[in-house]
Length: 108
Ligand code: FES
Image (tube, rainbow, N blue to C red):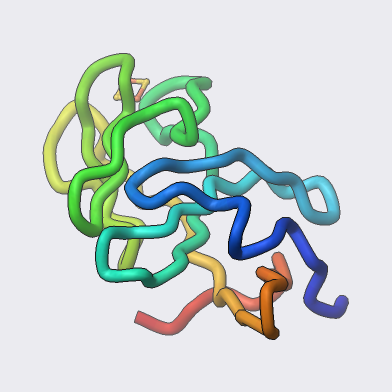
């Protein structure tokens, strides 16, 4: 698989998430307040909830349903009730294009 363009960098709002799908893999893409773009699995590991509908706080994305916050860097939940991590995907920025290969997990 190759990296796929998911959106324009200029389309992303700071401290908010959008849901994208690449090769059938749902991801939450976040531009954090430091200007870094992250991509993590979009489905909360506690329930079938889209994390992209949650809240960005620093380098975490909080599920709106029951409040588990996932690290955008490691995918680990930082508090219960979720206890399983979500995958973290490597993001490439090419000019104004945000590219993600769902087969490439980011090493953390
Ligand atoms: S569904 Fe996400 S914390 Fe419960």
